[in-house]
Image (cartoon, rainbow, N blue to C red; front, side, top):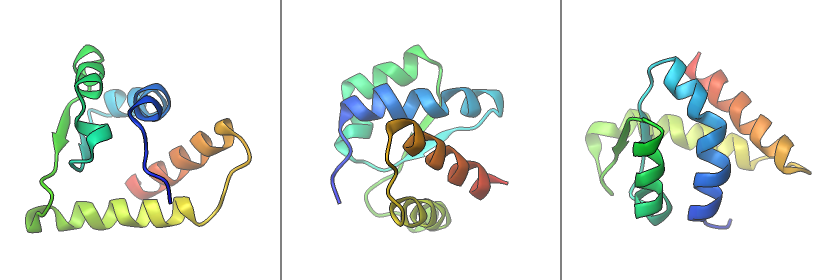
Length: 100
């Protein structure tokens, strides 16, 4: 499995979930991966008014959130998508399904 890049995170992932996060008043929780904590990512989130909480590397308090993220990640990676559009649609579908 490849690591997400800053470019993909701020040009694909964040724009695809931004409206959903903002419209529902959600806070984005992510781990301390360098793609999530980079200056570019921080600037993007600030500029787009996306509230963010960065989880520590080890956190028993957030184990429920980590469990949900693991479920989404496992289901997401279980099936490959042929196009970028299909990949984004799949992620959004799984994200919304877990949040309902």
